[in-house]
Length: 275
Image (cartoon, rainbow, N blue to C red; front, side):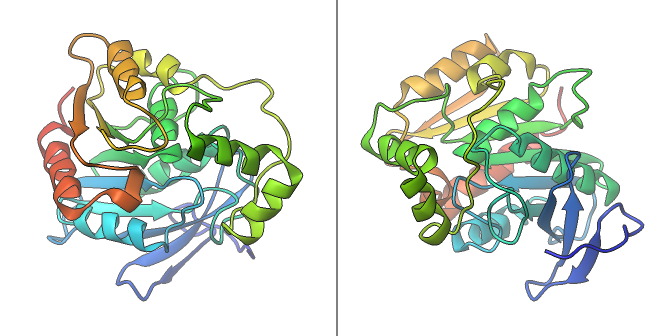
């Protein structure tokens, strides 16, 4: 990805897109170039921006991410982006660690675009990232958000209790697996272990309040069983989170239909400005 001088809104490059919005290249605080796209709200207002954080092996151009952005655009402007190592973004995936810097760059862009409120909606790996970002606390250097939605999030690291997660760990930790990730999943994965191990989602959740938090999980999630959302909600404390256990729902953005996404948009409209 080539880079150019920064534009007036702090991006490296901005250009129109075929989707009716415009794309940008954002620079993270650790120097990674991240592809992003903005599409304004259907009504054209700059009240609420929804920053969408995809799951592992996703990207802003994937159909499921496009579908989510299209539905959420009915409730506010939408910023999508590809995490490092995904799509046309630079760098290598750290599977939820340094990705908080990618999300923070996208949140900062939404603020510079003039939105009064900014909410984050994350799926799977992206859900763990929005929780860690919102729970980073004062002094972290992370931009504040006005609401957080975590869909299909893990609660803790290194979970291997399901077959899909055992396969994912093989992809991430083994040289042959990372080759599969690069060529099969179009995802470039960092080969180094976490050092230090970042704060887990369940350790981050207690620091999110008073920011409104919604935890969404399916009872047919093949990756993370229901003890994950239940422990996240418990960590938030009484009144600290809304919890939706969705009957028949599978995992992340690929399983999220328009009805569920619309309910999330309605929750953001109702709760996104209340602290």
